[in-house]
Image 1 (cartoon, rainbow, N blue to C red):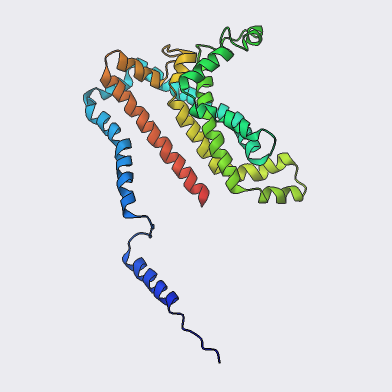
Image 2: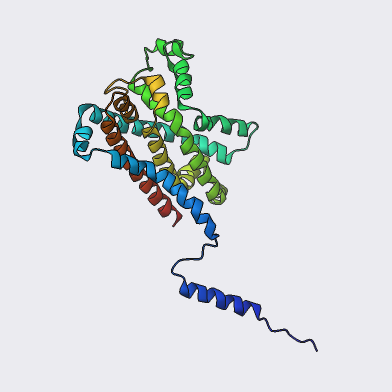
Amino acid sequence: MTSVQPRVAEPVVESALDARRSHSPRPFSGLPRWLYVPAFFGAVFIVLPIVAMAIRMDWSRIGEVITSTSSLDALVLSLKTSCAAMIVCVVLGVPMAMVLAREHFWGQEVIRSLVLLPLVLPPVVGGIALLYTFGRHGLLAPVMNLFGLNIAFSTAAVVLSQSFVAMPFLVVSLEGTLRTVGQRYEVVAATLGARPSTVLRTVTLPLVMPGLASAAVLSFARALGEFGATLTFAGSLQGVTRTMPLEINLQNTSGDPDAAIGLSLVLVALAVIVTVVTATISERGQR
């Protein structure tokens, strides 16, 4: 007869795991303890400069700084142009993300690299590129002159600058969402006779909507903080092209650090709100 060996290991392991679960208030992460040390210093490296600004700020002037005419003009302009840039990013970036995620063609990796180029380019280089494309003596100047268009150093130039640097954020984020969702439901809908436009409208977009919303908010946040390309291509004219980052730079270089710090803290608060909104959208999309 064949003897059956008792399986001792599994009950022992299960008992150990049960004991750990009963005594541990949080889920077991499996991370080595030493990893928390560089993680802590990384968090301090990010948070400490913001704390330093808050300590340096003369809080008795915060109302005066925020409500000044130049600050309000810069804030309103930044919000308007960032919203417009977000719309441009959605209109142009969503199709790009879908083509890159769903299609396979020769030179696709090269196209993807070019689309993501503004992520690694210095913003001032992007501003110069836009200036020599849409400027008065730029590549498209003859065509623009036919329609009487003059984009450089205008509010439209601010929107183009913000869109140029923010669009890759939307494309990268949405492409990742599309790859995660997969094509199973799209294939089923197409098999049942749905046209490609119908599949896009009734299947693909609803599936990726949380990811799309999160990507759009991220592009808005990046547009809100744009500085270099805007200064190079649009200039710094109050109420026309001077956004919040440009106003902060002006106040800092003109000898009013309290105003620069106060406006910087306003942008920090807006960034925190955007981050919370993005995290909330992503969490709801995963449920």
